[in-house]
Image (tube, rainbow, N blue to C red; front, side, top):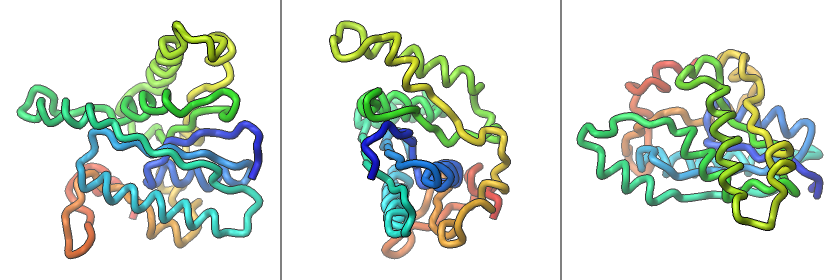
Length: 211
């Protein structure tokens, strides 16, 4: 595995981030970060199993490049806040914000060339530039009062990027190696089923999924 700077991918085991991981591993090693934020608890359990399965799949291939490091961050306090506001005060949230916030604890300009996010134009929940601005401003705050990083270099060296932003989800799905098409997970509210979980079939990702 390479000791050079590589992308840090926010990896959920879903269609978008898996497509980015597969394409990125064709040119370099990749570090991945999974975040337990305010997802449905059953979704978090299923996602973590999917993330592990997909990473193992890629690292068993005889490719030159591998998943170099895997990070998991559990934002317990965010789940507490979500529970406290579940009676209508807070009914929706943008999961992307949880993930870029968590990335502050992992991102390192000596290790990482960019922060990759699996956000697609079809998702449409927030302007891409707003996400980029949020990341840039978080980086500015993150380094205040520390001697570890030069603020200007830190921001310039670790940009937030959404590879293949304009590529439709169906095209992304067709990119995937056939085994991966059965591994990815998209459901927001999976239901307990025997010893495992199954998709609810009712949430927006279930309805929008190309399959």
